[in-house]
Length: 484
Image (cartoon, rainbow, N blue to C red):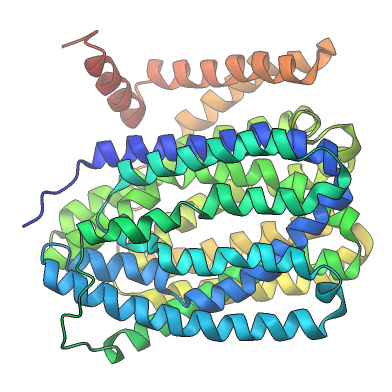
């Protein structure tokens, strides 16, 4: 039996990975947005949104299903090898079909044909994701490897960004750097995979067993990709690249904060699947309730802080040219909480329990909601309309999953001490809102306000003896040898 990884180590490494994922754009996006301006940023992000649909088809539902399938057999090298071979074979076939569809789209869709080199560059994300088998490494909880590898390539991208992107015409170079920094490391995944699985055929393959669950996960992936990329695509077709640029800046901070909030759920999925497979239901429920509490504790202050200091955040990250992004950002920030919770209820709870269809229904409901609201609001409100569409869609996803899960894990949301979180947020707001009146440089305003807000928030929860905060603090102090 393979040695089980430390869940705390996994979380620490994934948190470092998450930090690198938002520190990188925090450094590069302010520079790139000022050089490329809303039109250049909008052009690249519109192309990324289009390619995401082809990537979605190429990956089917394997990125999520693969974690669960491999986690169940990770103690047996031969079974793990067989599972990986089966999934990779399916993945490669569908990737080839996806590229045929992309080639036809580039040839016959005028907007794509006019920027064919941009679409070819970004399309490398499809093949790199396929050979990267990230699902295998997550199933085996190889978060130390994933983190180190990712940070190295992000540093390469960071250096390349400042060396090579100097004018509005450099948007193709920006696209190459984006692909390399996030996906080129997947080449190492393929090479490194021999440590965990054999490359030689093991025989007795059964591809058919994967088809039904993959199609369910694929349907989930369709729904998610539709409503996560729909806003950008509809803005691009119904408005223009400039409006897409404003929306991109608005969702950039949201994306960064979402990655922080969902970092725990990422490391818990393979462990949750493992517990279910072994019949350790009590451990599974404890894990789920802690995860929900974690999301409320982390997401709530992030949402409130960035609503209050949205203007400073946008001006720091993108520049004053992106002023119209402030309101869309404020509108969309509550999705951070909704996504954090649905990530736990859906991916960490319903999926390991085998209730993928409930997750699928929730995401279909979200996609339809987003589509309808976008059609109604984008023509008149532009990027703000797109933000409202996403906000309502994510709420619908969470509500559908909640009603599907309430009988599976009783009292899931009742263990959270909401009054402590609300009281701490109110005090944190009062402790930081005065910074708005000082007319400071945006960076200085963000630093001072963040120290005041999150400092008061954390201290208040400690004084109120919030269980999870106290537990984490004690563990940190023990690691530093400050307490026994």
